[in-house]
Image (cartoon, rainbow, N blue to C red; front, side, top):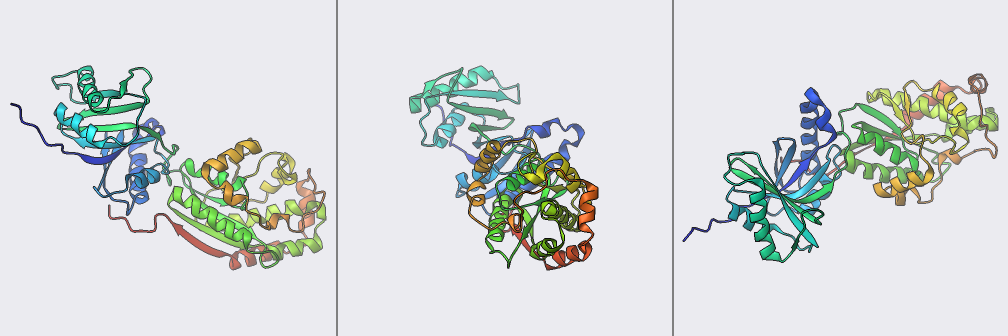
Length: 401
């Protein structure tokens, strides 16, 4: 009579990266940053450790951990290609089968298959033999249909020396590159639909984003500031730490109202915003400014006006959405979760004192002549000195990993 081995099962999540695999000799830099971000993102959620395996990571969980919450947080870490609920057990096939059966959740897939790999080829059974043996055990326990070509659920089994890692299906991760590997950018955050999506796209490329919001309080209400705070809090769930600068802009607009041709005011406003944002960006060592502008969307976003506006910036201006249409941006905002916040009615400073017919084709000479009546440097320094600063962190607990 054979001895029945106990099921030794460690709950975990298996995490794979994709683009990082193409980094060659620089890959350790990216994987180290990704592991650090994963630990920070799951702090306080019951993660015991993050183990680095060949081409992937295993996140070991405490028995009491809320695995759904951990999965939600992992899914928002940039650099993660895909991830799956998983477990770790021994190499005895009966033990593996019992561990998998014990770890099945309540879902009832229409079909399943076992996909086995052997890191140690000295194992007596082939991958196909392992798949048949464990598949038969799962089918006997559940009654699920086996489908080798198009299964609804794939149970991955990987034998690693003295242990076996198994996982259930794959969930798509945030993709991109780990936060912090591509430098810092300062994002102009208006409170509308476009700018949060633009910021998110730069964050997904590994940039650490700082946020700058221009408001017209007390001439207008605090509504736009409140929206900027909520949008920053949402975006912080993706990059874990953020800083928001709330810059008063009403004084500048009122001065421009008295001295600048109405048709030119919007371009002058945007140039002053970039000059202010550029100085703030340099203080935090950001290397570029980011806006949510799209060619042709409003009067200030013609090629001619963008060229004139960019000439005022001390840093490169990046526009991740420049070629997208509004429907694409709205869909992206809904997927991000920023859309419900962005459509809350507010009084945007960009609409204050805006003329009915702004110029769509300005020139550098024309705008510089209009700006001569403004004491631009003094206005900029006053706005920066009066800016409020708020810091955000996610999650709001200290990591024990």
